[in-house]
Length: 574
Image: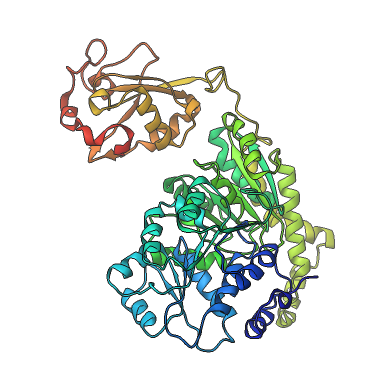
């Protein structure tokens, strides 16, 4: 069996590794460390998140660094503040027995002057986010003209986040003869281009298959109607009482909304998205790592760089816009040789994406049925029983038991168990009693909209004078209402008013979403109108006097002043 001592690592680093309890190197460590310690070559290393990439590049870099020199010799660039801090802490642990070696994290959201002072005292290794690094370079607070080793960690994520120009600018200030080590989970064209532009004949190390998902992850998908996504999420969570999960949403709005609904329903949940301040993000992540938050609802951008062990499930509340992002999402679970599950909640119209996903991750994604109420109640009561069994009796409870035993004296053991279990059973049963026992995919007709559903038609006070056509209006409505393409249909646009249909079961949600809604200071009103072909003009639709025919601009009234200019075109104005 391979151990760390066989990789050529020096005794000081081996002591630290042993103190941390690591015994057997991971595959990426076994393949990378000997090459990086002995060969003067650039490297491209591909391995999934959670496979030990930090040690794979960190240990060789720390061994090569001259701790007696105060010159900055190593630079690690990471996409996010969280990952920057995580790498810094991990490298500091490996270097704990190597005296005189200083590692300084450089990231936004902290005092730039304090970071500059730390660098000036002598930092042989910098771990930096691209934005703060460039800021300090512009202010001449950092000198990387003599670095010997440069690591691009999570390179694919940095490029996905739009850091290509930043990376290019940073690398332009480094020596041409440095060694560049690029570590990534996937190998899109953009990463290949970075390797081509900034590396010289790099050695390539690949653990598993390029872009493939970890073998430790089971992949499942559940097909539901669009309006049933949240109910499906609850069922999946309730079936796994000990769940410790990340739920991914596409937008900040959906992320906040789903987290708030989970909290209202009694779950230990929290939201992580770009509208949070750095302090709020730190508090959420601290609570999540401490498992005070058991379900973290996050956007893809906000979750990048999160490195938390023992996550049991990743739930894709919505599939990502970029299909390759699925690999990064699912890689948050199944880490460090533990097993994990990746669950996709999807609509019938998205099923075609499954085959494409399977080709990208080189793994089977199995179709699964949502659990019924009986399954959920069984799992929850079994979990409660296991918790009771595993709980040690408090030594001081004996003092209080006589009075309790007197109250319960008339009950048999079976009756006591029934009443104890009923505390949890009643809560769940009352909720699911209001729901159907089994959720099934929403049937659709040939147009993709709900079949045999009663229609409701609406009027909205925006139209072609606001630079909308039917396509852009439908896109805006789909996004704003978080609906699928087939949920909104029969979209007609006139000068000042537009019309659209949904199934009647969505009426309450549509009207509630537009209640007190304003766009660019303008009140946007949605009202129920008549069936298609029986349009009302602006005054009829919004409570004014009757008019004749469709609105063609003559009934503009107070809406005329809200006409938009070219720079606010289409649904980008929201």
